[in-house]
Length: 457
Image (cartoon, rainbow, N blue to C red; front, side, top):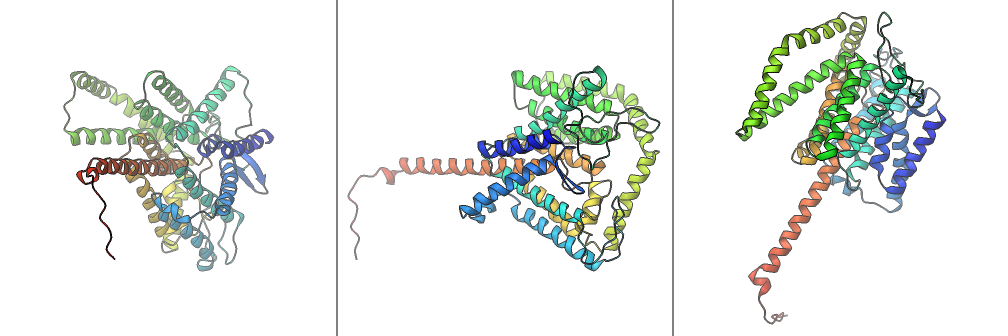
């Protein structure tokens, strides 16, 4: 663990020295199965170790300079993020008092006890608090852009590709350095001993989530750049697709189909909304793609139904469905109040969110996302991150239960979008002020020459 611990410390120092907090956090998020340090039963992920270091130092500087908290009001969704964190803490503290004796849906099958906060409860509260602080740090980092998200995804994909070459071609690789957390069960085989690939993540499903997000970012970002940079983005996207295929993860297939459907709906809506007339070359391309899709549809359908069918019939699917069903029961048993952070972990994100933070917490979380994404949709450079956020949420709904995932990608996406919105509003205000100044300079009243009338008292 020494090398990753030292690297984490260096990332904190780098972020503080250069004020590129986004890069430090992005690089830390690439090692989602890595631990910077272990405190008893809690292994601190590299992302949250760097976040904690930055929050402590930046918070001390802010308080030392008597910073005005009212500045945060300019960040979209700030009140909702704060409200979500406060409500989640309240539920975590109060739920054991209200529902003492209720068995929760956790790996240990813990039972709520009045006045008893477990280590898991405390850790999840800290992680969520750090996650909200990460959004603020990203929102007020100078020159923020989509590149921070690309740095996280590309680093994870390239390290996973390096490990693939090590496993199958004997290329030297520092095994166990980037995936050293003792809290994970590292999975690389399926039933019957069939080999699978997890990259530097904990399991193939986790790699599939990174792959889908990377492919989404690479394609969206390639549309915004040209030349060698476009080729580089497409190459990384291709590597990600190959890793997704060798992962043999059902999540890769299911989430991939969801994202393809979303892209089709958005593209068709944009086309109809603009009432645009396609150029002959574009029309020919779309026609050719449609013909190929129709021709390949039977084979694609057979492959997808085979993969999904095998998953549905597996013991893993039964276990995951059972945890989700029990989590929804817990939501109802607590009358929509929830059992608190760290007291519930289903197989999917929606079930976890409802069972832990309740109906109010879920509404606050959804509202916070909408408050950030809404204004970000109007800013062109934010669109790759919006697509990545959509991919992350789709992956979590299928197979990602954690509210504060170890890669921090969900919260980094929200932070980058908030930062782009804040910067865009500042640019608009500056242009408005400049336009007003120019109008004043060229107005007839401003150009009139004459004595200033005396003030009568």
